[in-house]
Structure formats: structure tokens, C-alpha cells
Image (tube, rainbow, N blue to C red; front, top):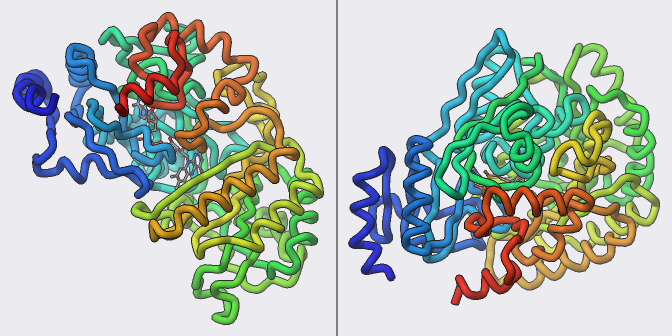
Length: 474
Ligand SMILES: Cc1cc2nc3c(=O)[nH]c(=O)nc-3n(C[C@H](O)[C@H](O)[C@H](O)COP(=O)(O)OP(=O)(O)OC[C@H]3O[C@@H](n4cnc5c(N)ncnc54)[C@H](O)[C@@H]3O)c2cc1C
């Protein structure tokens, strides 16, 4: 296969404006590397698209040569679906432009943009929309799966702020998707991932935010975890949506505002955020300090873009990662107790239990309004199994799995596809719940041959996704 393709790749080179890379080319190894170091795959061809016509050419080439297709936005998906083995990778790393229409409060965003590219461009005009909390994440994958972050309580999921998208579909045709054009497709891409086509531009609604916001970390001793988390639960029940507080249970990194004696010990970290008047936010956040005996804190006014990068040092690329996630509508004592029990046995310095608060306007959207179905979720919990050395794989993975299993009885239905690993194909139908049947119909219409299957797959093929994956990897 490789030799044949090596001969054919120059033809593709002549047809695209962007770059075509094959194994051995300069830049090939850099292009196939993604955030999760557990993924080490080698596509036969990488097409670094420069235009939507390039995308159509790449799809046609893959079809003609029976190549599996993967699509890379920011390369952060934990399952590693950005990069395939032996197939064709559509790589958007050179399409990162963000254009802002300040009058209409809209941003037009190319699919290779990271959250940092997006936030910097829109914040230059004092605008923002809810996106994730690690600035190197890609806007494309995050949006297509749902997307949430600090602004979600106030403005909903990222998809709730998507006004339209341009795609290239499986037949190589271009399609515009919005409430008015191809509304079924627009419904499906708001949560249905990369199943329906390759997005070449997103249009987002924007809101006035900051540029200065109030945010930071407040750290408590682990032996007070129970009292801190119970008070947290009560506090967030009535806190206005401009306030957000996420919980991280982990071993304390050597942060300068924490006493050295605490470094490396388990701690409870509350990450607080307020977008609005700083004096008002200071008053609203103050009760959080009284949840326990504060070991250290670093809270104050700062630019929104700075806070959007605050977690980057803990989430750098190159580590080994294995995640498991649950949604919760309520945090009962059982859920909190399980979190505390497993946080007491963290198998590495970097492993953590992360609880994102999404309660707010995202809950007011009906579950059938977009493909994303978990509108009852008030919290999204993610077990970040993370470590550096392959010798720790088994230990860290089995800890993550055991915690996931122990927490399952307290979790709500559904799930967040953007946090699912490759072994969780069996959770996908449940993640979409009552929307799954409609997703299958729309998939049948736009991609009946399931050529976009290297993802959290909505599988319309007669053979299941497990068989497709097995055949392709043989
Ligand atoms: C450190 C870290 C922090 C995170 N924090 C958050 C968070 O705060 N909130 C949140 O909601 N999520 C968060 N996530 C999850 C994140 O949303 C997903 O990992 C998402 O898939 C990343 O998008 P990407 O473009 O970087 O990934 P990629 O791996 O490049 O893409 C993911 C998948 O999306 C599809 N895709 C990508 N681009 C396109 C396109 N142009 N057209 C069609 N399909 C495409 C493909 O199927 C691809 O496999 C985080 C992930 C990481 C690693």
C-alpha cells in the first residue's frame, strides 16, 4: 500500500493548495503527534488543508484509495481520533484564522484555531463565548462534542452559541448549516462530533466579557474534604450564573502561594471565577474561603485570556493520559464520599478528579434542541488519569477505571463524548439518549457509507463499529 500511495501522493500534491506529507517527509512526525502521548499512529498521508477545496480533494483521494479518514483540529481528543494508522489525516493546523465582526458580535473561525487563538482574537474587542479551560485545545473538536467552560453557567455550551458552520460532506460537496440552511445537519453537528462532515468554518455568537474578570484558586486541606465539598454543593445551588466554581482533588503542585510542606500532599482545590463587576464578585466569592482552613489562595482580578491559560502548565502535551467521565445532576453524599475515597489513593502526582460546574442556562435548553442530550447535567466529572512513564500505565488506568465504576451508581444518564476514550464505543448511544435515533437518520442521509467513522461513531454500517475498527487495524 505504502509504495503505491507514495507514487500517488504527488498527484494529490498537485491538486491542493496546502501541504501533503508522507512518512519520511520533514514535518511528518510533528504533524502526526497529538496531545495524548499514549497515541502513536502513522497515517499514510497527511493533508494539511489550506482551503475547503483541499478538504474535498482529500476526501476524494481517501475514497479512491480506500483510506480511513481522520480529522485533526487541535489534536486534544483523549481517544486520539485526530490521527489514524495507515489512513489519511486531514490536518487543520495551518487553518487558524479568526475574524471578528464586532458590530454583529460574531466570530468566523477556521477549524485549526485553538481556544487561545479564539480567545485572544475576540477578547481584543472585549467579547467571548463559552469554550474550554485549557487554551491549547482545538475549537473544532470541542465545539462538535458540545463544549463547556467558565462561561457556560451564564451563556450555555459552546454549541448553544454556534450560529452556523460550513462543511464538506462525505460526497465532497460543500454545505452551509444553520437554523435556516440544512437545519438537520446543524442540529446534528451540535454535539454529534465529526460524524456528519468536515467543518471548514464555524460562526459563533459573542458576548461582552471582561476583559478583566475575577478568578483564582483557593486550596483546602484534604482532611477537610468532606466539609468543604458539602458546603460547595450548597453554595453553588444558589450562586448566580456569573459565578463558577470547579473542584479539583489532586496532589498539590509546587505553587508559590502554597507552603512547601503542602507540596505533593492531597488537597482540595476550588477554582473560582466571576465575570462582572470585580467588587461584586469579591463579595460573592468571599463565603468560599470559609468552607475550611485555607492552606493558600491566589485570587484576584486578571485578564480573561490569562485565566483561560491558568491550567495550561498542568495540562501540557506529551504526558500519558487516560480519562473517564460521568455527568451528575446532584452531588449526593455517596458521590462526594467516593470522590474523596479515590482521591486518597491517587496513583501519580498528575492524576486528579475534576468536577466542572455547568448548571445554568445550558439546563434550560430542551434535550432535543441539539444533538447534545445531557441537558440535565449540572456537573461534569472527569477522572484525569495522567502520568509520564509507560511503566505506570497499568496502575493509573486501573485506578481510573475503578473510580469510574465506583462513582457510576451516583451518576446521571448520558455522558460527554468529548471525554470518552476509544474503548467506550458502547457508551455512545447512551450519551445521545433519546436523540440517538434521529442522529442515525441524519448520518444515513449525509454519510451512508460511514466514511467518517474514526470518531465517537454514530454507526450506520451493517457491521458494528468494533468490526470496522478491527478490520482497519488488521
Ligand atoms: C487538556 C484538555 C482539557 C480539556 N478541557 C475541556 C473543557 O474545559 N471543556 C470541554 O468541553 N472539553 C474539554 N476537553 C475535551 C475536548 O473538548 C476534546 O478533547 C475535543 O475533542 C478536543 O478538540 P480538538 O479539536 O483539540 O481535538 P481533535 O483530536 O483534533 O479532534 C477531535 C475530533 O473532533 C473531530 N473533528 C475535529 N476537527 C474537525 C473538523 N474540522 N470537522 C469535523 N470533525 C472534526 C474529529 O472526529 C476528531 O477526531 C479538554 C481536553 C483536553 C485534552
